[in-house]
Length: 190
Image (cartoon, rainbow, N blue to C red; front, side, top):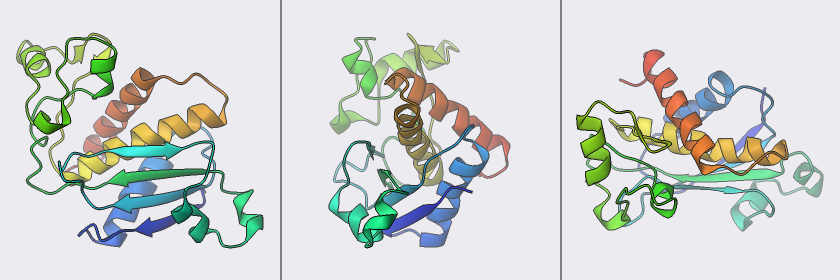
C-alpha cells in the first residue's frame, strides 16, 4: 500500500471523494511500485483548466508541513499538486489534447485562455482519430475525470523519475488516457 498524505486547499469538493479518486489511481491503475507521496489538491485557477505539477527534486513548503518530522522526509520523497475544476469548466465535453503538444509542434492549438476549443483536436476527433500525431485525444466528461486524468499524468512523472527512466510527456499523456479509460470501464466515471 502506498503511503499518501493529503493537503486540501478550499477547492469546493468533498475531501473524502477527492482522496478516494486519487487512491484509486494509485492502487488500481498504476503498475509497479509508487513511492510515498505528498498530495495537494488546489482550488481551480482563474482559467478553470485542470492542471498539475510533480515535485521531483525538491519539496514545496506545503509538503514539508505534511511531514513535520525529518525522519518522514526520507520516506516520502515526491509530491504532486493538482487542481480541481468546476462542473462548468470550458474544457469539459470537448476533444482535447495536452498543452505540451503545442510545444511539440503537432499543430494543436492549446492556448489555456481558449482551452475549451482546440480546432486540430476537434477535427481529428470528427474524423474518428484518437491521436493527433503521437498525442492522445481525449474528452473529459466531468471534474472527476479531469482530476483522475491530471493526477495520473503527474504520477507517471513520479514513476519515471523514481525509476531513473526517461522524461516523456507523451508517455505521461498515454498513461493518463489509459487510466481514464480504466476509470470509465470500472463504472466510476459516471
